[in-house]
Amino acid sequence: MTNVKRYLEGLQKKVHDTYGHQEEFLQAVDEFLHTVAPFMEANPQYSEKNILEMLIIPERLIEFRIPWMTDNGEWCVNTGYRVQYNSALGPFKGGLRFHPTVNQSIIKFLGFEQIFKNALTSLPIGGGKGGSDFDPKGKSEGEIMRFCQSFMQELQKYIGADIDIPAGDIGVGGREIGYLFGEFKRLNGYQAGVLTGKPLAYWGSLARTEATGFGLVYFVQHLLADAQDSFTDKKVLVSGSGNVAIYAIQKAQAFGAQVFGCSDSSGYVIDEDGIDVDLLKEIKEIRRERIRDYAEKRPNATFYEKGSIWNHSLDYDIALPCATQNEIYEKEANQLVANGVKIVAEGANMPTTLAAVTVLKKAGIVYCPGKAANAGGVAVSALEMAQNSQRVPWTFKQVDDELNSIMKNIYENCRDTALKYAEPMDLMAGANIAGFERVAIAMISQGLV
Ligand code: GLU
Image 1 (cartoon, helix red, strand yellow):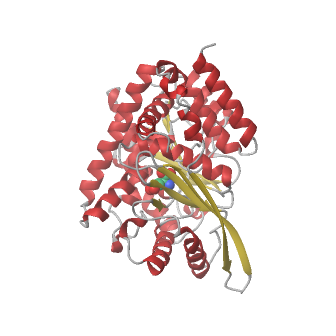
Image 2: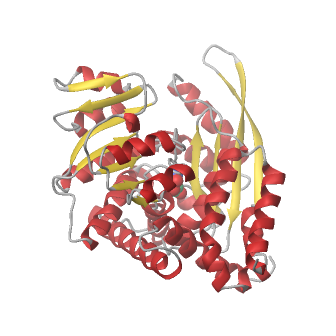
Image 3: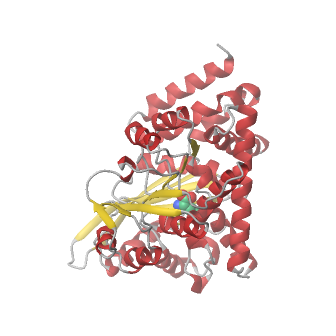
């Protein structure tokens, strides 16, 4: 056994012994270690300097109490988190997630992946993530506002436009960012670049709302173009119906694809006439209703309350999981194979388990990991920071063109890195190695800090 193999095995065992209870975090680390081995063998300086272990342990992890009051005067408390994972490439950058499943393991897996995702954008941003186990579902406007204010009262001690720049994620959109921004401003004064995903009225960026979904489709577009193919007449299924899913559907349709289905936590819809994205936006963005309401308003749409959209039997070409982590296990992956799917591209973070990825790969399906394919969101966040520093807003086209070229670079970087160190089109290995190399070079050159 080589020294590098011994190093990797020892590290994996140590991480499992220490964080055995943090399932999602271990899943993200295992997937990463699994793919970087050939690169580590070719570059022994990284294991000699123990860079991987330094990457796995966050620079800082903050956990805090968020007291807040319901409209009925009930006293409530939630837990808040911010992981400032790695600042080798720039200030910590990453979203905030408000969802009842949030815990240390979820925040650490998201923060860990964010390091490499942000590195792949080639923009000067380190990796971070945060959030709370607060459930925004069913809460009034006043409750959401008070919760955000209380969350920021604590978080503001640790962030700043050149220190750590949070943004949105599941459960945190323009409305929440607005309340968080207002509270930060009240306590510290106006600092435009302290949060991204801001409303357009006060230094948000055009195309930020669309960025993750558009970017995902651009990534796949470049992949298809490599094989002299395109989205025209491709059949697509999407999971989720939030920001990422909506704009992925819109862009895929604009490129000539037919999108037949999407979902939310209550079930999924299959619309034989293709998803009506304006209706979906009205239901999800304006009325904040359930996907069932979409099916009721469309003549040829069916709502399925039980089961996952990924277990639906239908012939189609491209699967875009855009809901949340761990949507596609081996069972769902086998169904994708049976459906004749050719490409799986992740708009969500870690929706596919490692075992499921193995099934997809064996069947020759091209798998595009979230840390590469959904990097468009954070990339445009970094462009929002650039506009905030310049104090000049860019046009939609400027931002969108830049996003497309960033996604092309990410795709080509992952493809070329896979070819060099792993199998052709092993984009998971390509993304992990290319992201890791950038961060590792910066860490070594900055010394033991
Ligand atoms: N939450 C998004 C992600 O997973 C965006 C983060 C950001 O814009 O900072 O990458």
